[in-house]
Length: 258
Image (cartoon, rainbow, N blue to C red):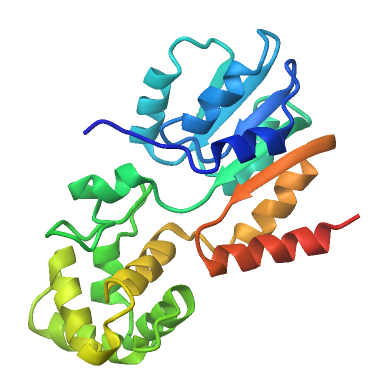
């Protein structure tokens, strides 16, 4: 499947980064390289873009999309380790960093990734397919208490306890293997009268995805680390997609003020 990526808030990000032609910029969530391509168009041959992604399929697609540019360094890694990545490249400070948080449209659409609650796909949800922890493991092995906590905290799902209880009941009969298996359990766990705010499984799927990919716990420190590797007057642009990410980023910004 082709890795398509329509960059979100593209003009706002490019304006926010205030790109210097000879500067060093980091796209910490490279994806299909939609944002990176626009950054590179504004860089001279002396400028540099560092593209980081934990998804090797994304990196492969980005290399193809950016094949006309020679001033790019590709890193298979996690933006949570940005200080170490920059240090390993022999760079002290950078002029700008972009983080486009969350899951990409490609990851949602690609069936074997298991991110989407539409259709019947393998329960996976790993952004980095080399890691061991999968959604199937979380659903079939976490305790009822931990499942309820994760679904409530990361999905802000008020029926989290009922969903966790029914997951444990069903997995005692047979392993929960597919996204469709999980959706059926979730739908059964939420009263029909309360299933009027989008798809009933969206919050639980978000919660499990965040747990599998450890998206939230490091985020506060990641933002602070990004700020530490910026040059004076450097810029950090972050796109968030839900209130949990928003909260962590805003708290880090507040604490890093001045």
